Structures are given as structure tokens and as C-alpha cells.
Length: 84
Image (cartoon, rainbow, N blue to C red; front, side):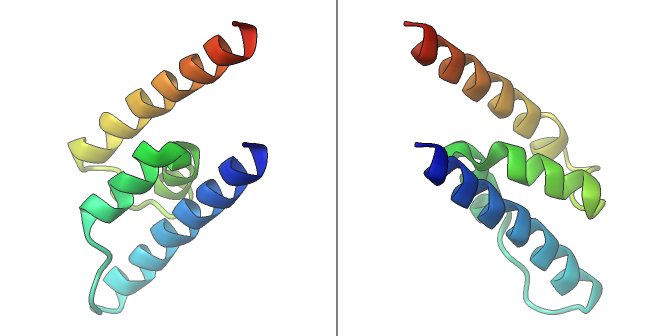
């Protein structure tokens, strides 16, 4: 499980950086639903880190509201499953 979390969060972080690069260079972008899917499949920390490090999608409510909520729920689920 820990290896999966590392890989998915690194991939999510990389995709946020790549999408920022593509946006700056006016190239074809990564769809928002793909970036949010990374958050839903436990890559929310990577997406959130990428949002703030690359200053990307920080003004989109789908990201600045949804991703932290997803992360909080995932942390709560992780803690619940570890203590149960």
C-alpha cells in the first residue's frame, strides 16, 4: 500500500507540473478530470503539492476546495483503517 501511495502521488505531482508546462507553452493540456482522478485514487497529496509548488489550478474551485477535502477524507480513512 505504501509503494502505491508513493507512486500515485509522484505521478499526480508530475502531471500537475507537466500540465503547467503545457499551459505556459500553449500546448494540448491534461484534462481537469484526469488531474482530479489522480486525487480520487489517493494521489491527492501529490495534486495538492503540485498545485502550490507550480502555482497551477489554485484559482479553480474544483481544485482549491475539492482536493483538500479529498485529502482530509483519505487521511481520515487511512487513520481509521490503521487503528481498526
